[in-house]
Length: 68
Image (cartoon, rainbow, N blue to C red; front, side):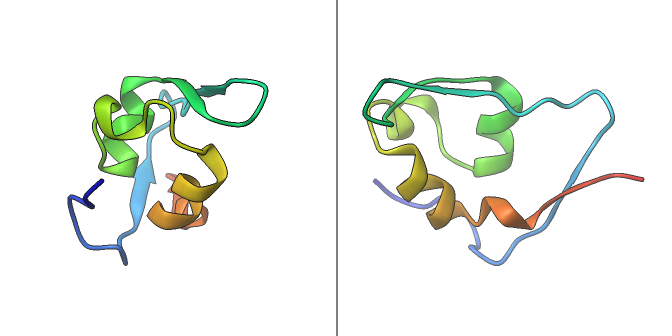
């Protein structure tokens, strides 16, 4: 799995953007919507079956901000 861009990035999330992920019972990705894929910088093949907590920490999801 390779990161596709700078890990110290910040995103402006628009009012209509909804970041959606679904995980199986053990916490592995089973779905991520296009907005989530755009923000995280990975394609679906890189995320599918990987632990959500590990990937969310790796991409710095806490840095995502909502546009005011």
